Image (cartoon, rainbow, N blue to C red; front, side, top):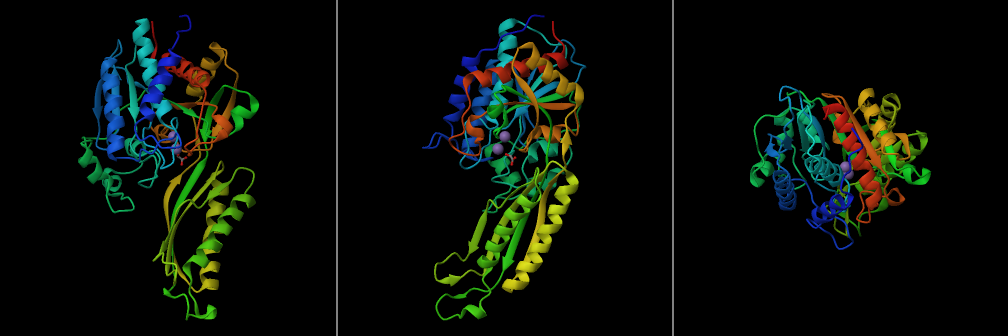
Length: 410
Ligand code: GLV
Ligand code: MN
Ligand code: MN
């Protein structure tokens, strides 16, 4: 079959229309998981899929599946997907691109009157970002059986609202989750880093993703008056937290090449300017392409906490709330992505994902791979996140090829 075309303008227009839901003043998107804005994006997605002739359903995690039948209903579906939730200061493309590139594949197949052998499914995974509810990627993880539904439904946001309650509130608490065969899974995404842009490559053929660990840490000292309390008598939890932040950054530097380390969230209690902070809650995000090196970073962090707590006269608790091992993607799916880049004549290179993606969990239950396209200055998780219509269309062409290679078409 000749190379099929996709409609890059229709893809771009759909991205821009989706980005109006939760649009921020600086040109980004704030569409936290299971909020009313998330619901609005789900409704728009569902309408578009139904207009494209798909039947749409959702499961007990609120993961949405839009199905385009194949010639052989006995075959497991070939899936494409990503997420529609965003960071609080998110961009227009993180997640939405993979979802709408998948939709553009289906729309294009409709335009060309192409039937596939295997059914196609477009997936929207719940709470990929992990910003409102930790752990991240929990919808796809539950689908893959990595978390049980009870655990997933009990995960709560900072106000104590749980995933289960919020799914019920927005009408997306379906039945069942996963436990069915998937023929292959592909996810298109912006790179969220600087490599493709710097090397002038249009397509990242993603061979795997690095390992991650997330932690929640509470340091406890003693609240007391900022005026009369002498320096020597203080148990200042924020002073301890400052040392932890510095140490986390140092660990990231010590474990080069490859390590990333971030404290992204902190709560100072009681957060009053003339009270010595009695308690600090903070999060740590550690990543490394090598599971063993990440385990060493874990040991370092625990050692740092012991020392800091002793020096600042604090108690501490640490909970590891997520462990994702390094994932190699499946060779024949990676090859399908590479073949797509070759066939459509796009400059490509192999790349390992620095970010977490639903494909990481789907790789546990199906052959999976990803397609990256460049983003401006490598910036993501930022309202200024940007990508060119041409690169986004190129990634969509590669997705189309990979899906057809795995689903079979005539
Ligand atoms: C998901 O956005 C991640 O944290 O990598
Ligand atoms: Mn994403
Ligand atoms: Mn993200």
